[in-house]
Image (cartoon, rainbow, N blue to C red; front, side):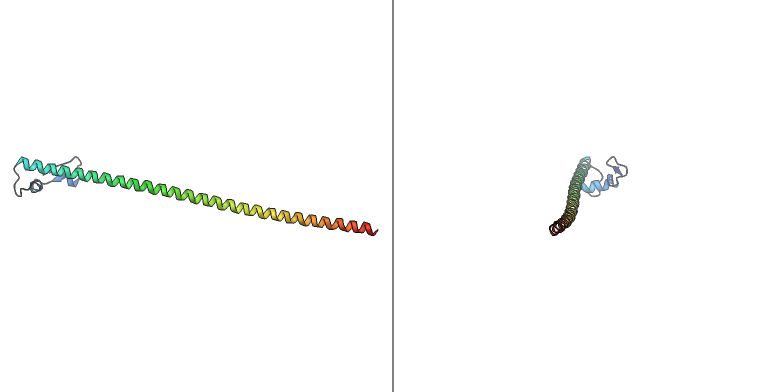
Length: 127
């Protein structure tokens, strides 16, 4: 067996001489250095192509992950802004309700005070 590559765990790195001869177009013949060199060159080219493809796949994957993270971050930011706006609206509504109650109490107090004053003035006029 002829070993190609540096990774001992790489099953694709171990090639049988018959496979190389077959790739060189010489079935059944293990002779001829030129045929083997050509086949080895084809194997190297194929490995380089696989490596380039793998790197392109990883680059694409990294781009997709980055885009996904950016979209997720934007969605989270949008949700946080919506929650803050909702909270502010609720607080403003509560504040307006409290002011309306204070105004109503003040109006009642002023009306009650005006009635007392009128009653006193009427009582003074009668006397």
